[in-house]
Structures are given as structure tokens and as C-alpha cells.
Image 1 (cartoon, rainbow, N blue to C red):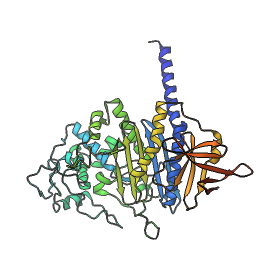
Image 2: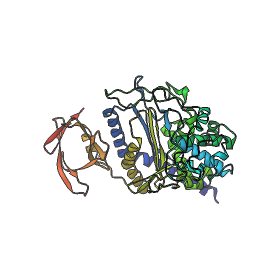
Image 3: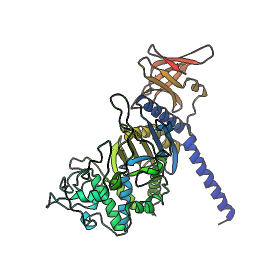
Length: 480
């Protein structure tokens, strides 16, 4: 092949890749959606007195957006950032599950192996001797029949004393199976902690060392660790806070280590590291072959392997699976003292959202779903129709801002899909309502069916500055 032709093709590919990457980040459709996300989250933090939150959005191999809002430490006024480290708690189970599947593919274990085959000390009381044995696969799908927790009060504050592996082993003989295996879904931190011990036994390496060497380092997850990093206290590690108490305050959650429960709930990470983790999955599924894990094995993990008799509680191998608005999401959530997190992937669309917070009464899955609803359509439209975004009239910018509503809430005027729109805050459903200009400073609300509704009038002063917004004879003053 002609060398000049090869060089030309390389240049074309490079330019096209660069153009595509830039068009996603800077595309007006995506940019306006991201702006609405930031406005909405910022307001939610203020109105609900949430200390801090970090979030990231991924399309395939591109980190489309990552931000920190609020504070990683309120008293020290340390801002939350994409580099802030949070406990990701049960998202830890994904890394443990991948470790198990790696060893399965190497022939060092089978999913139908009884757990006792690998752990000679597994002596929980067999309450159902006629039922199937507790297996590795049953634990991965949370259908093993094991109780939810080890026999220690580690979720009880204020100390949150998590047991060591030795304490878990010691207490195991005093516990009994909750259900017959392969009968019901029962989430089990005990079970996933035991799989950490299986990894150590099957690999011949301590759990944390194995995960670091075979998953975290190869994927470049430099800010992810199998235990909450004590050395990052007062640095990258966000301070955890309790729920809001009756007097409106929050307690600082004392630092803790997860110890023997780490394979189920001990990991810590950043939103950008989990974004890389999501991109790896999209890449592996697209290219096939092997990278840390075989592509077919990852597909196997994403598929439903368990449904309860009433067709509820779908589970993959380690992954949670859910359906919402006819779309399938895979991933996992995390809920530990002082921290909440969520990683959600829409595999078909190659879009992932990561949300982490250092407040214990936040629902990161709800935030994640709303971010999907706001941004995913814009991303998919930009990918399908690059360079065809409707550019908003620059004159609309003068109306954008905060407006104080009569009942104490606020109305945000934003640019949305190339047009002016309003959004009341605080809100759990940040769906902007479009406005269509009819003349001058007079607009009309656009109904869901495309018809025009009531008038929205913006008043301006002698200098041409917008001072208030009037809708249905009620006015909202602009907040400077």
C-alpha cells in the first residue's frame, strides 16, 4: 500500500476522532443539557443542605463531563471535585465478582462449586439439608440462602466496627442459613465477603493484592482501593456525614475501616475512576477478545441469572439489573455510613452515569436516572447527527438566570434544546418546560403536544436589563 495513502488515512482518522470528541463536549445540545444538570444539582444541594456530590457522564470512551459540587469537607470548606474519593461500598461487589470470574476462566473454580470446597472452615448451620448446597454462583446472584450480614453489628453507630476476617470466620458457626439455596433473592454482604476469601484461596494471594494486581492496576484505576484509604484523610477522601437530624444538622461520621467485609463493601474510588471502569466495559463489549476479562465473560455477567418466583429482583453475576422506561440498566449502588454512590450503564447506548455523595440521605440512583433523562438524548442526537444542532438565538441569553417565585421557590430560566425554557427548583424531576417567542419579550409555554400554552412575559428596565418574569398574572423577580 502507498505510504502517502497510509499517512493520509492516519491523519484523517486522527482528525475525525478529534472532531467527534470535541463535538460531543461542545455540541450545543449536550452543552445545554449539562448546564441544566449543574444548575439542578447545585440547587438540590443548597435546598436540601447536602454537603457535597461528585458526578460523571461517559459516552463510550469519552468522559463527557465530570464535576464536583458542594463540599468534600464542610467545616474546612474543601470543595468536592471529580478527584474526591468516596466510599463506594457495595459497588465493591463488582470488582470481587470480576475476580471470581477471572479465576473461573482460568479453571481454578466453577460457579457451581459448593463454597465449602474452597473454604474448609465454612461451617454455617445447614438449616435445610435437603436443599442444594451454597455455591459460588448462588452468592454472585444473591440466591444462596445465606443471611444478609456476618454476625457483628457493624452497621450500628457511632463506631461502625467492622469485623476482621478472623472474626467473621469465628462467628460463622453460630449463624444459620436463612433460606434454602436457589429459592429466594436475599442480598448478602456475608456471602460476598466469603467470595473474597475464595479469591485468596484460589489465587494464593491476599484478596486486596489480587484485586490490585489483576483489575485495578491494569485498568488504570489509580484512585480506587480495596479499602477506604486512611492515608487520604484530610486530603482526597471526602468526609462522610449522617442524614439530616431533626434540628437540621448533620453529624460527621467517624473514620472507619471495613476490614473483613471489604470484598462486599470496602472499596473507595472517584467518579472519574468509575467512569474509566465503565468505558472499559463498553470497549470490551465492542471489540471482543480479552482485556482483564474475556468479553464473553463480561456479557455473561451482564445477563440475568436470577429472578425471584414472582419475577422480581433480577440479578446478573455480581451486577444489578433494572428496567426503566423500556431501557435496561446494569451496574450497582453503594450505601455505607456517610456515603452513597451509584454506577449505572446503558449498554446499548454506551452511556454511563456515576454519582457519589458524602451525605447518607441522598438517593444517587435517582440523581443518576434524572441525569440520564436530561443528557442521554442530547448525546445520542449529537452522535447520530453531528454538527446539526439547533443554535439558540444569542438574544435569549439575556433572559437566562434565577427568578424568585412568590411561594419561596425559584424558577430557573435556561437554554434547552436551542430554545428558552423554565425549570422550578428544588425539584426531583428537572425537566425544563420550553418557551416559544411570539414577539419581543413575550413568550408562550410549549405544551407536551407541541401546542402553545399561556404567555410568559419578561419585563425589562430602561437599560434593557430583564427584571422579572410574569406568568398567569403572577410575577417572579429576577435574582441578581
